[in-house]
Image (cartoon, rainbow, N blue to C red; front, side):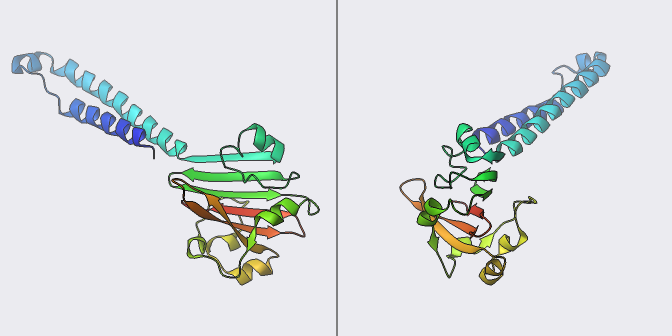
Length: 200
């Protein structure tokens, strides 16, 4: 959640609390206007609740992104590569790209297809591994039908290999001059690839 979103929520809840606890300063005026004041309270309470609900729903939506691209060219036009949603070294023939991620903490899942004959750039960018590093041994589920179950939870390299995929890691630049490891699972024969970027 962005800090500004939390501040806005705190302000809205403060307003709501003030509305609920507010009382007229003069008791005689309160008696004379008890009915109208009650109506005003109900109306203001309804408005405040609607604002709070809108803020909560908007905040939750803003924390997650999802996109679908028929081709790599479409992803480039949508600035998916520029925003680092899509790896820059995918084959030019990449298609049927699905990507989803959380902004805070930064986490990403991506699936793509490519022509097996168009894989040289991808092969050169990936480092094969026999033993996964600790940060990539567990993959949370994105809860999407396009993400396979054998790439969720505690990963079993043998099960993944039996499914026809090979495991790779890529070291990418991260914030403050640090690097982050990312996981790739590739089926070279069928031209399928899966990518997971853990929280940086």
